[in-house]
Image (cartoon, rainbow, N blue to C red; front, side, top):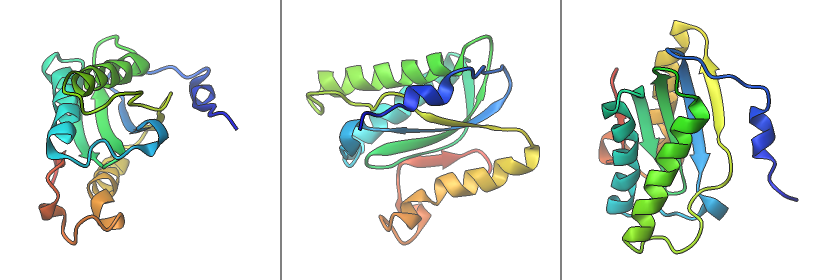
Length: 151
């Protein structure tokens, strides 16, 4: 059965200054981010969006085959364009460094608009604890691919 993730976003409108929780998965769940350098490529792509003042990252974690990103959108940039930029930058670098040979990302992504301020900290904790739930580490401090402005 084909993936119809693009339908999740039909009719959705992103808004400046809103906070979104994003999840995106690698193509066929390839563990492309198992290696330190490949995970850093994705992290640098997200950081570039911050430095270009397109968004503010509140929290993220890069898992072997996906990422979670809590981000506040700036300017008039659409969320789909921000995610597209990060995916393109990451794909380009992974191909340039011969880490990936085929597709890097599945189409689409999951997003959730946080509507209340009291959702932010629990969402950050959920994002940061992903490596624990996946049993990749026994302590978050042992996992190198996350950050959170609150923790």
